[in-house]
Structure formats: structure tokens, C-alpha cells
Amino acid sequence: MKSTPLTAATCRICLVRHGETAWNVERRLQGHLDIPLNTVGQRQAEAAAANLERTPFAAFYSSDLTRTRETAATVARPHGLAVRPEPRLRERHYGAFQGLTYAEAARLHPDTYRLFVARDTEFSFPGGGESLNTFAARVRAALEDIAARHRGEQVLVVTHGGVLDVVHRIASSTDLRAPRDFALPNAALNWIEHTAGAWRMLRWADQTHLGEARDELPNA
Image (tube, rainbow, N blue to C red; front, top):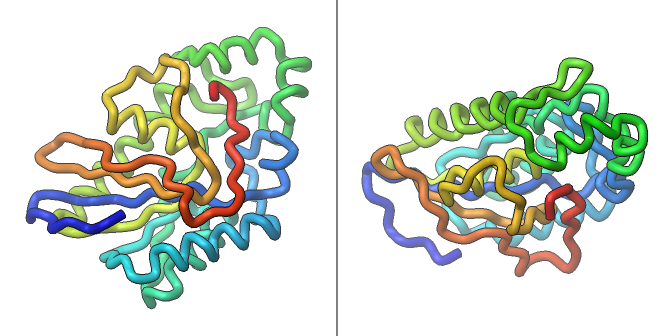
């Protein structure tokens, strides 16, 4: 994205979903389970790094899970900046669904799976999982803290598909319960800005640097 000057009150954020993992290919719910990038995911991270090599960033943030840390380290390397881990940027905790494919979750937990795909905001996954409301609140808090810390600056955040689903709704003022009508590809670039307490979207799901990208999440 072509950069435009930032005002002292504006924080611009480029958000990147981590590169592909073997579990993405299998349509398996990862959540807080720590899965590394596969070979395709590593290539995607390198492609994102090449695309952003000449884009100035004041800081790099990442979820503290391996798939995001690996992606962020690759993208940050040409800039000579360390990646700051931020646990609040983790994927939603899917409780007992973690490790299952979407098909397995639907078969083993049909009633709770229906609540999941219906985007019931109060529903919490069995086995210690988060509700959509709780998940969205921690994502918003992390974003707002980063924006407040970097007024007048541009930063990069590497995170997860579920987090980006929430971010898109925050930036577009869309209800959490609405069906998803936007893409969340691995390693795509998503640009938003925060000024005077308000978020706005600049560009979403830029895949021009990618030869292949997967969007295997539900509610597509």
C-alpha cells in the first residue's frame, strides 16, 4: 500500500495473518495449540517480507504462538527490529474443539457446533474455551493499547484468522453476529488506522505478493 503522511494523532497498522500450517490444510482448529508453519507458510512469510521490505515500521508485534512468531520474525528481519510478543493477539481459545477438524467438531459436538457457526456471542466452548464477546474484548484492548503507544507511527502486527475476523468488524463497525463476507487468507496484508478513538479500514486481504493463500475458516 502506498504510504501517506500520518498525523501525530494517527496510528496505522498493517495486520498479517500467519503463514499456512499443516493444520490449516487439514481444516483443523488450532486455537491456542502451538503449530509451526509448513513449507508453504514459510514461503508466504518470505513473500510478505519481500513486499514490506521498503515499508517503514516503528515496531513489530506478534501473538506469542509459534506460527505467528515465525511469520513475524521473517517479516521483521529486513528492518532490524525485534518482534514484541503480545499474548492478547492469540487466536480464540476453542476449548474441546482444539485439535479437531471442523467436520469432526460438527459430528462430535453437534449442538455446540451449531452455536459456533451461528456466531452466538455468549457461547463459550466446553473445556475452557472463550465466548466470542470475551475474545473480541481482548482483541480490541490489545489493538487500542498498540494504537495509543504508537500515535504518529506505523506498526505491523502478525496474528490469527479469528483475530482478524474481529478486527475487520471493529474497523468496519460490523456486528460480531453478522455472517462473514470478507476474506482472511494466510499471509495477506490488512491495513487499518486509529485516530481520535475511531478505527477505519484502508485496505483488506491484499494478496498481490502471494501465489497461493488459504482461507479455510468457517462463516466464509
